[in-house]
Image (cartoon, rainbow, N blue to C red; front, side, top):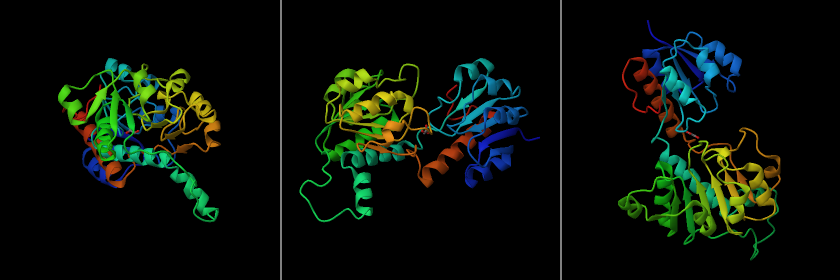
Length: 319
Ligand code: GLV
């Protein structure tokens, strides 16, 4: 008999075709994510879960699934899963690293450039037929080439963002609790700096840290005040890394110049004040959203799931 698996929400055909040969799957919903009670109900008889980053897989959910052996998250981040409890129960947890690195770095750059050059705002202006003729000071932005880029979190994505910065002849600084070996610092032409020093000197600060108790509200009201008045903050990591209310205040009071956000503290909610500001670019968590990457993520999660259920060590084990 094939192991029973819950796929919390519809995924791509490529992954389903693969899973069909190995497991007996149920798709939780075709709509938005499952409510906790429905999730608990559906995992009762399951040995595996293929989850998305919006599914909270906590102790309650795991306790409702006595036969659960593996949770394969279709995301590189896995802060939606209580990995400590999974470990205690001997449940494997996997993620999808690597396959979304370049795509997410590309989106980071799209957000840096569109925030610096105010592209979404200028597009809205043009569509509204407000363009009456060229002006010397129409939609002035901030220069990116030659500026100082501060990368917080120098993992795979942080490094891919650093590589692209060379094309813009930027000075790259990074903060990460784990300093890179010297040869890697050389390869990325990036120098390590303490977090607050980086915030003080960077023209663009981009966040690539995973969400942990240590990184929650790492960008606080106090730290926003340390940044340059002309600085740009970009976040494509996880919303709670930034105190979103404090950021809205800082943008409204022009303590910093602008922000570009792909993630929010209480997704899908966006802090009201942000919605009314003209110095922020807002995206709906699409960092890895290309056809190619999202299909790679789903098939990678499916493979991890099948490996775990067949007694092999999954390729991308995190707990
Ligand atoms: C996206 O946010 C991911 O963690 O994969």
